Length: 276
Ligand SMILES: C[S@@+](CC[C@H](N)C(=O)[O-])C[C@H]1O[C@@H](n2cnc3c(N)ncnc32)[C@H](O)[C@@H]1O
Image (cartoon, rainbow, N blue to C red; front, side, top):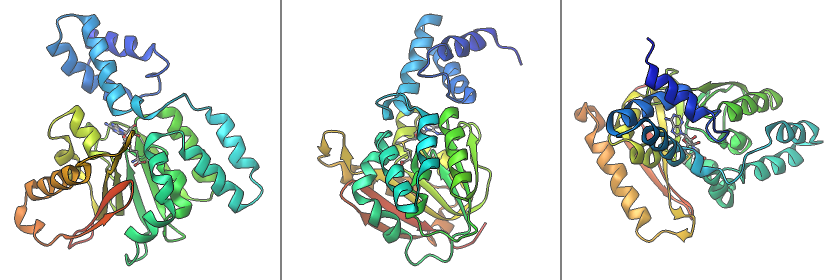
């Protein structure tokens, strides 16, 4: 359906290189709300850009040269060198950068004891798929990545092919179009607070739509300036509120939840009683 102010808003927002690669369905969802609440078109464009910065742009310090990154990975002579390049690249996104000091233990600890993982949905993945070599996954794993940055996803698709992972990237707003793939494991890492900050109720909506047997849900335990005062307690309270507020509360009693606290991240592994 044609909607002129909304189409114009999408065009205006995507003129800026910073927002050009962002999934149009996300720009439209935010744009509709901004057009409704702002006094002028100009203010609605500005408001949309601010929200996009909050949910995505804020995690990048600089634009990434993806062709160069891919060439570096392709030229790696051995597995160890490629892992080091993945580490270097994960520095480029704030969220994966914060995980680097704990990367060797994060997946080994949280996923230990799970049955073989044959399928993963990495929800709002950022550059986290570069951490696949650190994840204890089955050799035949199918890996689905979801995020709003088209250029990053094109790069990640190439990366998955390079390392021989059967994977697919999905360029979409996970709130307008929740991940539809059932999976053994859903990674929902440090994403819920970011979605909830932009839209109240978004975290519960997303959680209710994921079809996975095991969910690894995490929160930052550190702000950019260092370990945040009260951050762990605050996010832990948010997590329990979210879990207790889920519909079908009776069956939620059968959820098995394990808590992990790392220097830079607080994580919960949730196991549901039945497989999808
Ligand atoms: C805090 S980062 C977490 C990245 C990654 N999960 C990790 O822990 O390394 C939040 C991510 O959510 C993505 N994102 C934000 N809103 C989204 C949306 N509506 N749909 C899909 N991805 C979204 C951003 O682009 C960003 O990569």
